[in-house]
Image (cartoon, one colour):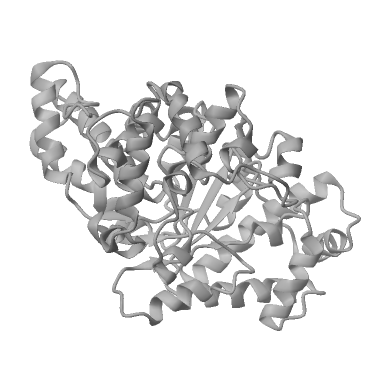
Length: 466
């Protein structure tokens, strides 16, 4: 089904070198330090329900494309927040997926899905309307077997560590269940406090109240609110967390005086804050979280440049993460300046930046990461997690900040069986780029081999303190 030379250069010499570099890294363990898999899968280790629930229903990369061609989310089994009627027949969902699989031609989704079909389930033919039921039956039969349970697949994929992304209000019971089990797989949480630091998030005041209840801290005060975050971060660290994650609409940071911060917190907590107050508070909390990272060692991830939930009707009917997060322009240079003036020169702090605004790579992000010890560049994210996106990232950043101010690759996925596919694309893409540098005399072959391993494994292990 898949070309063994996919993503390698057409030039025979460069293709051979790419293939040789790839052969040395193809079987390295997978480190997945930022993603959205459900820890319950590995705690309960139950069989995945059916092929539609595995490939279609949870994957916004898949259903956003289908919706763009006129299909309805409810016809793809995506649940309504109200609990209203949606398609529940997995075969019908699969049939609709198969009938429209041609829409994914040329996209990374097609490569990820076909990699999963071939390498996870042993299918040898592309999905079509004619073979849709045969594919469904084959995958469904596989899912009944013990070697297709979540833990078994985790081990078969060669995953060394997988980090989930968890609300600050999560009780972490599934992570505790994993730790208390006799399974040796390493699944760790990541501290995601967005609902408790964004005054414009639904139920912000109630969420902060719950944070106080969970931690026993007095969230009516600014000092108590910060203390509550420290307590929760410590809970996450005790469960193995090495990072926090922050999804903000912009890269703005602030460094207010104590008095200013207390007054601002009082406004946002009582609900009288303006939009400017909300943006300032989010920015202040990024700086506060960076300072906390200096104490507890959590890596700080910032995902900015996305206008989330662009379609308000979809948000109200189906909730968040339904494929309507859209890239927007992001000012990293001015936005990060307060945070970087406060802590950017700290060599023991690790701040990893992710963007959906590719125009900032060469102009802003690479120059920043090439100067500040605390900064590292995260890999291409969301729309740009692709062969061409990875190539553009390398072309725009390497000359300014090198390879070692980047952090390798992470898959950022809810689609569990696509994890090996995504890492395979990254390793192939990077090997092709490195071969090109060798071909033009900018790298020696031995250096390219060292870098292929670093980009596949070593950098992410170091950056995320795994």
